[in-house]
Length: 342
Image 1: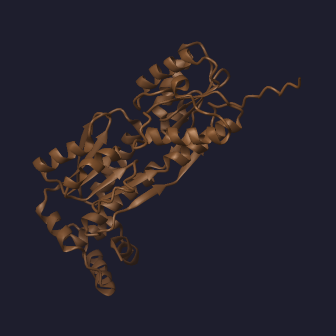
Image 2: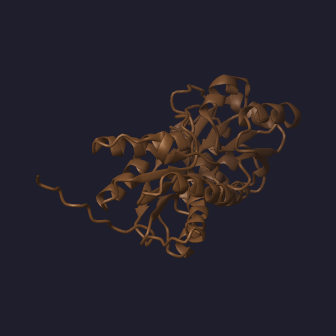
Image 3: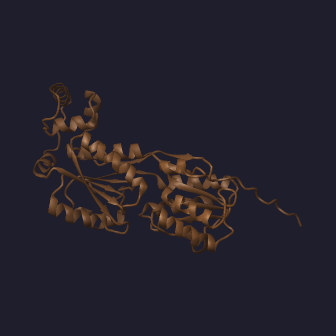
């Protein structure tokens, strides 16, 4: 029995239940009586140590955003802030560089500001493994997984990047593409880009194709500017590519402009596919074929996990939300040359 069950049984939102359990005055008497009645009926007892830490902390919840130009994070952040404010929590947003160590930044922040909780929007599990044990407050890692790290105060909500990338690559293969390049991220499996690479590589290997990293992969940060430059480098090096899989939609949109500036057409000369499902991809010309992450669910489940932890729930959440392949206009089918008989 945890706070989510109390919310379900009482008929009130997780935010309202959290406010009742933590003594917030801004709750109607009807709601307070109903929630406390359910708590008494089921014998729910919030963890007293977590409640003590909450009462002793400052008012803010720190939200660390990995990269200031990540359009996916901007969408999730807006929803996270709205949900926290709805629960009468005060978010304090801190932007970091894509290569910064978010755990070290959080440790410095905790020593100076004493937040009641932390949201990591993006992050590298390797950094968490090295230093997160020094963080004392509840936290949630969004868009990457904390599975296997073993921290009781760290939840995670993410997309299955490996499976989603494998699905996108299977779609390209099914459309006849055999020379497929990849741009974005790095090869480390602790990062989302590395896991998407791994999924794409798995899909190709299942069809007997070994992915050539030296020729067909170009790393870059998750921005349109870097996507543009990476696409130019990749296509100049491998002009026989028939498709490019960008590991983020912002990268893909930059790549689409690069293809246009190089005098080629999408998808007639080269197909482009992305990953994230940004709204901008629906309005690009052509519309971008991509994997859509459910940003609403990523935000809501992350906030719910954090509020539950703040209310004393000790069991961390390790959740992967669903994804969807959006088949739009930027990928075309290509015909395979028939086998020649000697």
